[in-house]
Image 1: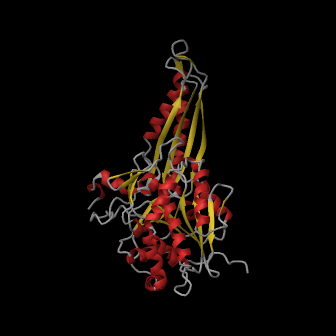
Image 2: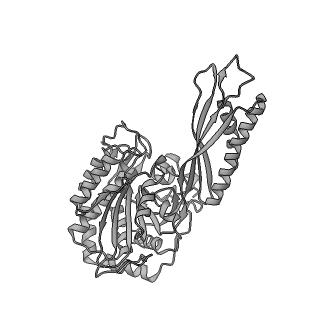
Image 3: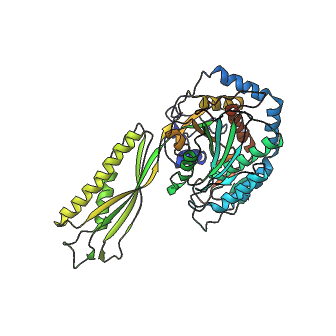
Length: 463
């Protein structure tokens, strides 16, 4: 079935960050709906031949009584974790103002067994659960910030089996799952071989510009891989990070009276309008998927004044950096030409424009045949899920751009309404997604006496 055959509301209700951040990703294979995924939606073929070591590790893990006990306890902890979800959701966390939510998450980390957890200089909450030896360090993360401004009503409301609140699934559900993982691992004293670095990061949304994750990878060279948590359908594994550049463009002119100075003074708004029209005519590559958008415009002082200033913001995205840069070049050239045309229209040279880069989200890709992807595929198989390899722009962009193995998986539950005041989550059986993701993580770091780590150590540890 082609993706277009799905109803748009149904598809969008599950697409989550994979719809909101870009890239042609999944619209189907949703929660047992029976909808078929169009082949051109996935960004890479799912591996069909897994390394023997991957299959062996998960066979051993899922047969181990200690691991089974942890998974059972994770299910039993579901209702308590929903209490964490409600509590954290009702703390505002606009971009650049995540402090209160960070403090609440830090308090929970410490209470659940990471007394040395802290808030770093960027505002991220960081806590290390050490393994038994010189195994790899796996970052497990979810982001603190939401897109909603201060003053938004974030009170959780329940109706028809769903919990409604801005930010409840994107990405507060991921934060609550991390806390539940920590609780059951510590309650059972399950010893991993590698280290688990728990992180609740800032700056994932909007103009946060991935500042939190950039700081994490700048300050923690010991990280060998990343497993991020976002709302997504079961079986989804994000392996592609869509790159983006964002610009603010300012148009400046002398301004004047709409009647008295007409014909002698160029309008900053007219110049911006010419630029927008030229940008709209640009034909970006379809593959790799490349997009652009003039998202906001402003300027002028009065209906009867020739505008002395105007400004607009532009978002440019692509699944491959060369295509992004090619499209960016055309857009900036369109701005320059629009200024020339507006000045020529009035035979002046007094209109100018300046462009400032306000967003730089690096892109990258985790190969489909890498061990971290095969680990997620094998874990999905164990839980009866068909894997779909998808792409988007998330925190995983940063490690992907650095060549560090990174994937993003779903945190469990049915979700929808992302970036809208009606955002919701149905947590019924959400523990299944939490189990699936935890099993993926345990295979990567290994469990003492059960399985060896699948994730390789990138840099030798000091003795």
